[in-house]
Image (tube, rainbow, N blue to C red; front, top):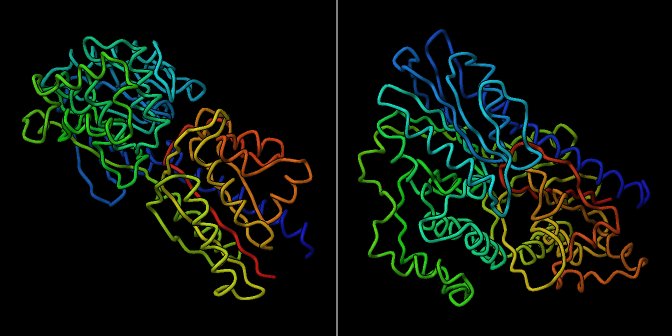
Length: 451
């Protein structure tokens, strides 16, 4: 096998493994696996095989609500299972992630920045929750993206001010935990506040996790989950990322006055006795499926990190450096290896370019891998959208910089300008999947063939 054939082979395998990983966390598959109805009995299990039973005949009405990139596809599968047992419902998903629904109203809205459609959806969902009674059941379908898709600005804060705050946080390098801490405190429904509207109805949340650690309080900013973060935490986050002077004055004032207001409902609040959270999908399912599939393809496969985090460009360099170290001192000639990572990095935006965390990670890795024949890397978002782009991520190998230089592309210049999208676009190395209608964070696949 010559060098070009090897490069093409690794690229083909990496793309196939990425696509197979996404299939393993498709909402319809997860709902079928974890939500089983036998006559009037519902058996629900989570990813850790914890199981609970509920009896539909104990409830007068069943409402379905949801938010996130997977919510519409989840709702579609739930309609097939429950059919006319569903009285009504509302779900909101990202533009392009919708599907046809029969009994549940679908609204598409803005992500990663919220818009007016999201406000309309949040109002409708809150209204539906408010009308549910003690003998009613609310099934909540939650997945990544819900925080942006359910904007309900706190009193005195406009949607535009919330958008500006969200944009600043996304570009600052703040983690999703930190971003959602602030989102909870400038919202009327996040951080357990939607449960205040739903109580005393029973709430079952079926959750596809897009956060490290699968904390229901972070996923979608936990609208039905107790919140132990505070207004003081919010101010500390703004200070940490030098945003105190940048956020809209109304937001800063609201957070500063927070100690005079009631905090988001915490664990001690009795309303949470009526909530039931089930994580039915996460990144680990995806990583394990990729590992098994790669092994069937003859790769020696290993999951190296399920908690990838940090600045994308640094993580990309670190993964590439580790791959080179293994290639030179651990890999055997004639054998193939698949090293798998999962998690979610951050990007501090200093430049004026276009990109996302996966594309930036791949570009950083490409610089390190230059000339080390036999190593490739794919980094992609399982939702199919990396940052504000139409790409899921990007692919690179030891020839990426050589090809770029032939086109007079300065890889380091593109990286410093946060312009990874345009770099990989010129090389036809963007990964374009379209909306996958699911979301379990990001995946990095390193393939090594020491020939």
